[in-house]
Amino acid sequence: MPGSMTETPAIAAEVFRQLSSGHEGYETASYVAVPGSGVARWLLPTGRPEIGSLLASWSPYRLRSRVAWTAVRAASKIGGLARTPGTAELRVECPRAADWAALGWRAREAPVPAIQLGTPGPRRKAVVHLVERATGKCRAVVKVPLTEQAKIAVLWEAEVLEALAAEEFERAPQVLYADPASGVATQTFVEGRSGSRKLRTETWRLLRSLMLHGETASLSSHAQRLSLELADSAEALGIAHVIDRLSDDSPLPACWRHGDFAPWNIKRQSDGRCSLVDWEDARRNALPLQDAFHFLHVQDFLFGAKPTLHAQGICPEADSMGISARQCHKLEGAYLVDALVNSTRTENHERQRFVSATLGLWRRYDA
Image (cartoon, rainbow, N blue to C red; front, side, top):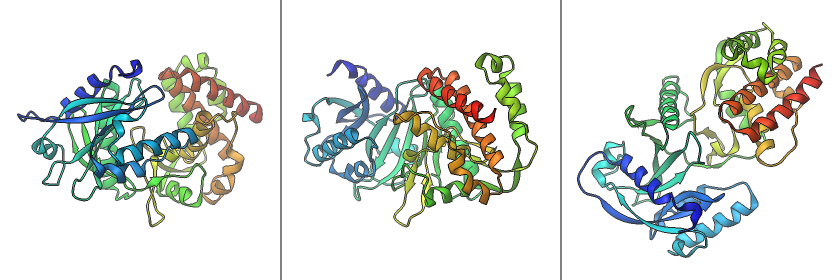
């Protein structure tokens, strides 16, 4: 096994251990660890053509990654995954049908699990896709936390999805199971292709669906909350003056903030509608346009663009929501402050530097 993936058998064992509900007996299965950026990113079952539809729904954005993923799909189809360069084969003990039923699986026959491993870090988790053997369709996903912070995030997402369901929001998964003790949670699988990298009409339609009609928020309230939360650290981060500039008591439309509104978390259905997955950073009663700014700024960072301000491009849509150009500019400042604070807390130093440079542009524009 390649040195960069030596921890993979232990991770696989931990994932399947958490999926077991204590029933006796296991099924031994063969899996292949598929790498990405030097670490295992997928654990795919061998000899299981049923997962072809699931693999086809995953579409990386970088050209090199797309080419590599096409090779993985082809190898899986002909049973040659283990012979693909860079992969590693391992044997795992899978739960049986009774364990899957306890996790919210509703079919009589046990599913075929295909596992996506998150990026290593304090919130790493495994997303176990449960594929129905008879149809080849993915019917559910089980999120298995691999750290304590991931456990908190997975359980919070389950709470958010329950709240969204209570508000009859239909563009999100539904919770099938959640265990507060382990942090394991199951939700319905949302079919569809990954979203476009551009803010298209359907993307704005999805953003508008997050608005809370009749409810308002204000920049001043957000600035006051930031001041209380950050206290002396605002000066250390050099954003105290920026927070002061955000003061504006004018009522703004409140909304749900997804928190990681990005193309890869958007699913485009065949009827043209879009849905959202991965709600672990969501919160209610948030400022408007924060997800729109995240959509643009996070791609600037990840795909090698220079720090850029985006308020001017968003202004036409903001105006249709009753948000002035000046407020739109301040809302971009609010997003950048939040992004700087979050990247500092998570010790994502590369993104911290990038956001800080972008915030520097905002300061000069606002001077």
